[in-house]
Amino acid sequence: MGDSVEQYMAELGRNARQASRLLAAADGAARNQALLDIAGRLDTGRDALMRENGKDLAAGQKIGLDAALLDRLELTPARIDGMIEGLRQIAALPDPVGEVFDMNYRPSGIQVGRMRVPLGVVGIIYESRPNVTADAAALCLKSGNATVLRGGSEAYFSNQAIAKFIQDGLCATGLPAAGVQVVATTDRAAVGCMIAMPEYIDVIIPRGGKGLIERISRDARVPVIKHLDGICHVYVDDEADAEKAFNVCLNAKTHRYGVCNAMETLLVADAVAADFLPGMARAYCEKGVELRGCMKTCEILGDVCLPADQEDWDTEYLAPVLSVRVVSGLEQAVEHITQHGSGHTDSIITENFSRARRFLREVDSSSVMVNASTRFADGFEYGLGAEVGISTDKFHARGPVGLQGLTSVKYIVLGDGTVRC
Image (cartoon, rainbow, N blue to C red; front, side, top):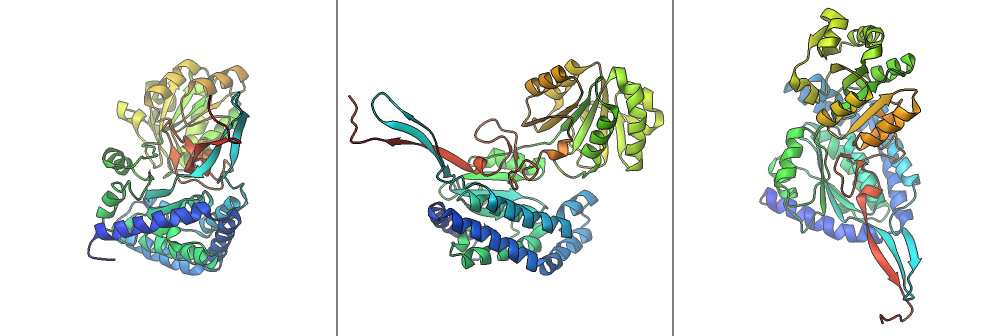
């Protein structure tokens, strides 16, 4: 690894910069073939991968990781299937690199348009979920970028195993192995190096807890694509279909707890709260979800609901805990989301077309939904193949960051010996 973490990271950066030029120039068919080769290696090597993941799970249990973190860490057969399918989906998507669009003739005789190009080297810092290694590598590879991946120490063995499959697949198809590099040290100094190497890394994408993302956003000398919280809301309107509302609200909270697109606050219109909330509360209690409600919610539900405090409305639980508030209607629901939301994902359940349109227009989040679970805020579900993260920023990329979010554009000009008069 060299004499120091700094030297090691600089070497990774130099290798990534060199590989990025080769990947940007590579034929799209070669990049697709590499993705398919990697998918095949993950499929045939799943037993070995699960053994390595077992080492991480055993170590996590030994140090007392909570259930939500262990869930994020585990590679089940279904999640390995998801990684493989994501790779194949990405391979089947149109190649974004070199796409030319918006070509127009100007009065001077030149043609002006834009071409989609890779960002260069993408650094991704993430915690717990080893499937991010495959998803992120695949998206960066497809979009012609090199990537340096720094996973959490709790997923070290899983990430190194996935990295071996990826680099073997790159080499087998004639692409540089340094196109995807997984940092092979758990020293936290590696993160500090990554975010301070603008000569080697063009953008940083952090995926993890709020503390990690705040630190990277504060200290990085490299541009950052980020989201800090996933405080997602579902608003049940007084013109909602009760069955749809029940199914969506149950799924949005209980499908998985430790994910950023899980519902953290349920808003219910006052006119339907007394009819809707008791059945909903019973379903949540059966799933072991703790309810924390406003005064009106506690009046309706009684002892099954604890009183919420001000902090609850601003908390991303990532756990079986749900805040519940009764609101007067759409306007108060939007006000609550504006004040307490994180700009991630919010949904309305209603059969009223005008209210649905108003919600879509007025809620300023990266994903806004009608009659759908917030759990759909995901690159795979959006048809992006996978995602490297969800951005709540408003510049460059917003929402699930897939292929287009990993590219930039440059202007191209075509002439025929044309000179400016």
